[in-house]
Image (cartoon, rainbow, N blue to C red; front, side, top):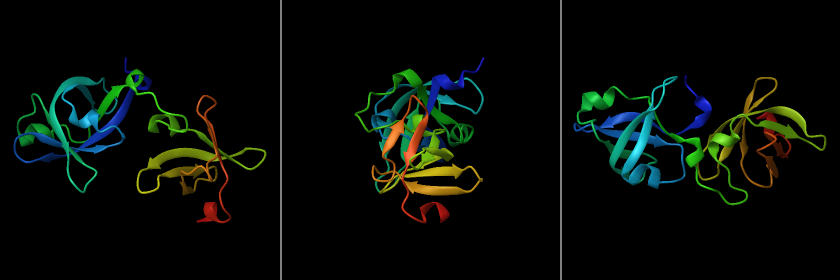
Length: 176
């Protein structure tokens, strides 16, 4: 049986690179060694069990947020094309420990977004958009999606175990 909560996506195979089976990976992890250090990894097709693979080499493409990986057994462009859309995953219990005020992407998705002194439910976190300043995508209870800067001044409190975060948006932010 597929146990989705035991695995965490760290990237997606988005395209082949060249003719020798190399793969372009769009990362969803801030730990580059997951894409550059050779060793055991797993890939996963949607709703299937992960398949163990061996990463033989990996590098970041300069100026882009894309890694190019070589995987044992994937040696042609056509074999690379067969796994486009698959996820690169890790066992959730292998996540590194983080410092205070650092969070794993996987832990933020699905949190209740609350606001105001009463901490009223206003929506749910649906995505974290990486960039110069990270943004939380919040789907408000009325169905509209908004982007909220993921900074301490606007998101002052996060309770992972209780599955919620507090948002103190400046006037007008949730109406954009």
